[in-house]
Length: 128
Image: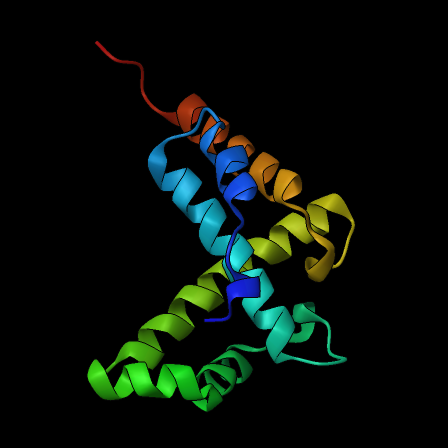
């Protein structure tokens, strides 16, 4: 994990101020991290074009993640699944915003999660 892939303190504060459940705020962080991680791993290829196989190949080729795999068997598979899941969401966000995945901003990503949360709340049965 590169320090430049991580959220800054001000970015964390921006996300923490959202009126969303903790799980959604965590998912925002994962989406931002996945976007940054994948953007640094591919050169000249749009993130939209990444396949699941390519994501697993990128993860398997990362020496830092190989070291973690040696300590915790199955880590690379787990990490690849996290990135693929986030990438699916990022594709939806990018399509909705009309921008490439690599250009999504934290406010755009946050807005998408806020709308997903509102949709969940509207479709939930009323409390007795």
